[in-house]
Length: 329
Image 1: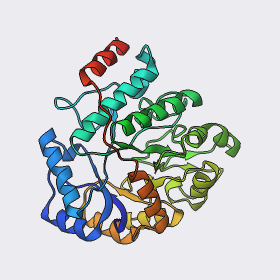
Image 2: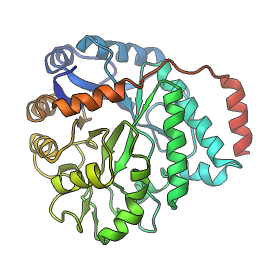
Image 3: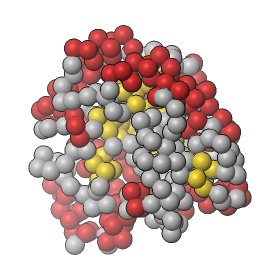
């Protein structure tokens, strides 16, 4: 198993000599790629191969490829998709379209060596949901969101890609963008349990999850979920999520302090893995030192998640593409 309790994003289109040495020595759990790391399929496959070679094992490589506004792999080399909420509203059979969309995404990821996708989203659409999130979601009622999130996860697993459930314990009430500021939710605990947390409770068997940088005043008015011991206890005990929990990107402005302080606080609160995305060498060094080695519990959860990797089921891609187009016509 790896040593450092972190996932790092490389800086550019190919691994640098410094990154190769740093990744070898730090031995993070895995890596995450963004648009800055992607030019074409051949280049991306070389990058994912080189990242794995740097740590000498079949490390998980992540991406945010939800489809719609949040997709790092784009045309002309990869398919473009509607925002998820728009597709749910447009498709004649929304759940079938949801399965095909995510099975096609999984096939695209698998082909370039990416085996973890930061999806599904189980946040609920609310009147106050910030535009940065709103049309990425699947709906506003619990049953619809749970079904759509479950289908997304199963489609990825069928395609040999591990899903990451986000944003635990629920980001739908956030009226500000956590990339820029710290959202606060002042709803009562009973309302949170019955509504916001309910989809995550129903999906708590998904093996990997991502926190939300958001303060729930009724539970911990001082700290966002990512760095809140009280909130992590709710996630583990009340929501019942025993999968591998990674932070959302530690570089986001919702969090205060240095990246090292953020990493230390998240690990102390109960997160298993630090997600650091911006590729800055000095920050990666600081995060690696602050995050420290993975705990035995984190290693157990990581092993359980990675054991779900499988050879993709065979699919007829042109047939699925035709059906998908018909469902959206």
